[in-house]
Length: 328
Image 1 (cartoon, rainbow, N blue to C red):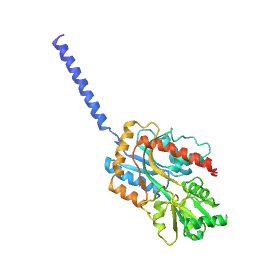
Image 2: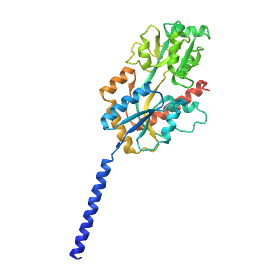
Image 3: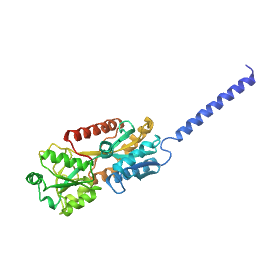
Image 4: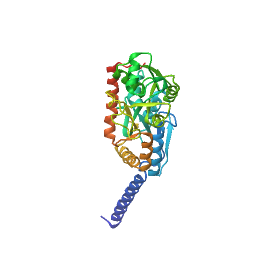
């Protein structure tokens, strides 16, 4: 080979090596996330799901040095947000802060629901678990769970309970509670849990199941008597409230809040999200905020969360069928 040819061959090899290094550097610089990330929330601003989303967004924003935006997509029991998430690009820049009622219950109550949460989404990680507190108002005329049940048994028209709407977690908690107690209780659906709490406080209905974040301030007031909590164990935020199980009723009702994405998120993006969210969840700011709301922080694992999403859906499907709970 001539000297000139050897020189050109060497020059070509050098150019290829430089290009390879340049491409590698470009890919490294494009590591996820390189632009703002959006969390879609199925409920309005100021609610517990929104508060969790904003606390997580703040922590991730500080960790990544990148903007993390919370977008409230309300409507149709969360289906508006779930459908929008399904249509989003699977690039990790649009994610959803989803909850049990939206993923496990709404599909069972919506006619011809087109999505399968176990196939059409990527379960990234759960964040926190929540439970419900039975708050009895003045109309209940009961200072204990036993007194409430006895009143309902004595008069099927005496006891009523409100919920955020048909198919909501607190509606199903009321149905399971009344069946376990062997007593008839009238369900009164509202457009949200806030008006139900207001009417229970005002004496229009007997009681309401409220999430711990709402119940913490009300449980110690002179407006309500907290008779039970639906978790398997007592909640550290309200340690004086006994569980339904402690009081002889085999009922546990709760749910999770977690991060989901469109189907097809790459393993690399999922891993980045798992690791980053785990760091935020372990931060003092996140722990303190969740404890103040009565939420229990849960482990981070896409694999475990994927399994949990399916199990939760199957659990409610079985319960609704077994108990013949009316949802329409």
